[in-house]
Image 1 (cartoon, one colour):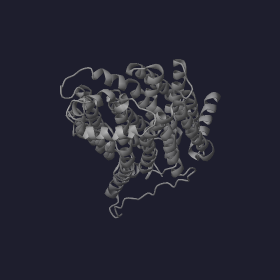
Image 2 (spheres, one colour; image 1 turned 180 degrees about the horizontal axis):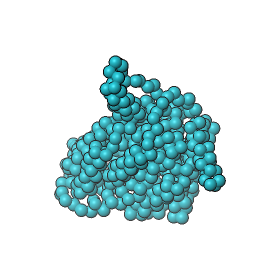
Image 3 (cartoon, rainbow, N blue to C red; image 1 turned 90 degrees about the horizontal axis):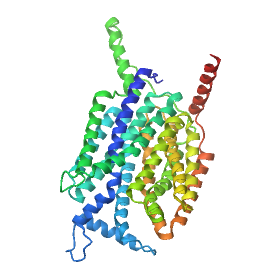
Image 4 (cartoon, rainbow, N blue to C red; image 1 turned 60 degrees about the vertical axis):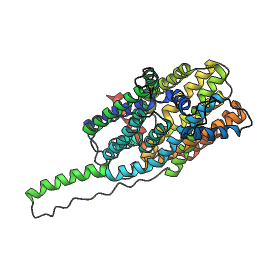
Length: 469
């Protein structure tokens, strides 16, 4: 049986999680608006478009050759300005697929050796990744940075596991919403800050070294903060420590009793939803959602001639709405209801994006996307935590993230391929059909776990008692 966490300890750990995850995600989002210019810089250095220039034999020129061969396979001509877009999409897919491989390993490691140990090791990999970016004067080094980052980025899933360790069912939804709020806040301010920092050139061989250096500083500060302030939260380890301490005290007064630490078995979990179903739902959702998310800047460019600044304002609007929803609405919703609302909002966004002709319609669809961002992944994480006992949470949440990252890795490539091959209306129409399938899953296949039903009942009882008083 898990010993309840004291409110003061829970509050302290949540504060550490929130601050550290916010630092991590702000640092992570620095690079997002820089990708086009960053990759353009490497191309100009290593694979110039000038036909009079001698042929380049760099890694980047080889990668661009393969991507151009893929682009040429489409019947519909694709303008050369999308070369950098294709390369950025390929790197984004690589990062997500590497996370799909690493997430279960990191999760199982945290179940065995502790959340704190796993998180500090993950931070070590993050520091190395950003350090490589600071030193990336060529594409090969930058690619190594992305590979190391993809294999070591475990902060989000470990923060989710820690939040689950310290929260009882009645507070599970609000705790998960707190983690989601970190995403929304970071994606509201991080990209703009990264773009601003990139305007300061401190190293000629790497014009983006200033942004990379500030990112590295944030990651180092986060690591030190976690090292000094984050306690271990894995129940199997914390309870063993408490039990051992109690036994040592008792042997001083009763030396005849053998000093054997009691062993406790994890509380059995009666599963309402299989983890395969939850994982498949996560994969299916992100397969379509990430494709739409990735194609959005291209669509706004084609329809409204949006530049980076206007796309940045659009993404900032999405982040702001998502933050408000997570702070005021999502944390009060049962997890399954949160997932259902988000998936239906995403389905409506797909339908709108295939038909819009005005900026007002674009922002209407963006508001629906903000609703989706604020609800679905947070709700699925909460559902998975209800279906896991304390000794397997890290692994189960890692597998959930792994399936999601697999969808996020495949989605952009598949969706943009349809977009270029058949056009916007067909691409978003197929996306709407796919999201309809996800909607059927969450409406009729997923069930409400008893734990989350108890949350609603406890909330209703507390509300009734408050009225009576």
